Image (cartoon, one colour):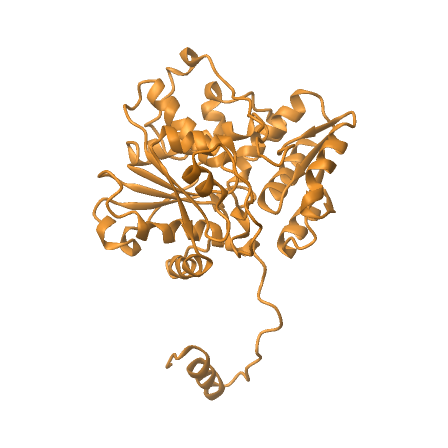
Length: 375
């Protein structure tokens, strides 16, 4: 078991911060509560919108309010930008020339973008079956993808970070600890939510892979309580793919971490086989619960969100699907679902679209046969 290093602060320096004024604050507004952010790593991260989903939420929650914190509005269209604004700042602070990241998608893309902005090289250790969208983005940002089997990631990370001038911005061990500064960036989600809602939500429903965002958001609310801004913490629900769910199994057996079989799942953003200790801490301190959601339920929720004009990856869609299982376990007050990333990054449908003759009769026949829509 490897335990993470946690960052602490002089909280007296943060007493002047206004957590209720303004709802579109960027990360640097919270500087007294963050590691030093380097101006060369600035991509204007944060200030993401809070979207009211009450009308399509389960009926028992509509009056209290259900919202989506849409992290797909960040510069590389995912929550990972908050993490990398901090980790790339750390790399610059120690004079590194190259960052190393192990990622199946969003983390690698975000690290590549922030490295490009900062003038650093970036090596992305990923898998051969990573989606084409992720490959294209990594290459477009000028990073160097290295495609290796999953079990080879950690030995390669260790080998590469032993080279002078390199700096790791992701985990160095199978039991995920992550970069010490990474989770600090996620705290700003909590600060923004307090400003957007005017209070602490009753519950947060968070798609969970290794649990860095889960811990970071929890720590943000914990700091709000420590600063006297609020007197309570939101209850956190961690949502994992039913095919795996290492955090769920760790909590069920009362241990700090477990490793599970890599059974197939389409929720690629949260398809982890091991949980982190940070995630266990966040659930215990918030009196939270882990939840499992099937791919089928996640796909149905993704379709529901899309009909509201919101296109999320399958993993955050699973968090919206989990709302149906919360009945009776949440205090009164608003519920916030964290939306991590755009569905545009997931694998596209194969093959060419069916070509239709450009006349009214053909179009009507096509709409009728394909979509059961009468024009």
